[in-house]
Length: 401
Image 1 (cartoon, helix red, strand yellow):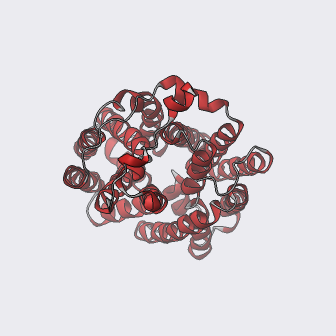
Image 2 (cartoon, one colour):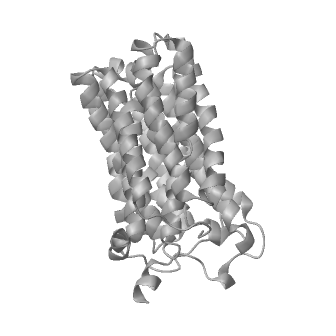
């Protein structure tokens, strides 16, 4: 019983609002969109960032690795520390940190300053993501908690698939520094929205690190975390270097890159909502399909992606399937620990961002030392590994959310 009380982040029924807090939910969804867009922004800008700062594309990819690694550490460590404070104030503070990181990145005269900027982004991103997952239950009546939670998660999913092409377009129309500055300004606007639209959200209980870590002992949670590790590491080993992949394998011009990534993004949004509809009925079945299609698509790109047309088709399928990863895996984790949502979410964010960091790092090493095609083979192999773990591991039952 003590463990349940330590982990629980669900608001008591009496404390739930009597009527709509949807403006607050939208503001929190804006925060999740902004933090994940900030994290992913370098993906479509690696070439110009590397050229401007005098580093290789593989080294420029470390801007993603650093942010993911910091987010992976900050989510499970800082969420319990900050959990004792009013969540509205914490979110506003973290959005200020995020804005500072993006604006510093826009100014950075060298790679060292860029690294410092991306550390700030990682701190803001990891904790905002972890805290946001448990807020819907405190903002809307009980009957609306499910849709409100899905809307908050959609900020993460939409940013994962649209943040990169948006940043790429801004970079092409102006330059990469303007792209970072734009997201910094967006973070400040979201900060204002959170301050105005969220009610006071005092801490309801103290979440302890030990309670978070004990969740790993659950077979269902452990299986979900393993699937997250394999899918996200494989995806970012390949996708971090999607711009040079499209330039070198498909012959896409710089002007086409933004359009191709937009195709990927639109398909990803469709995939997010399609997976969200299916994962509640069958978490295992949904992730089996996602893993299988991702493994095939990424693995086929070096073989069939020699023209812009075939690359666009494969990229659309890639986006469609990966668009469902965040909602499917986070639903798996929350269904595996329904009385420990914030604890499960902080673990999810930590592992997810650690996998981003690992994928970007390993992909960079492969790109620099073996060749750009190698990152696609690696991504496909890891997705195939996720397929095996999903099929054989312990899954939560349907309808548990």
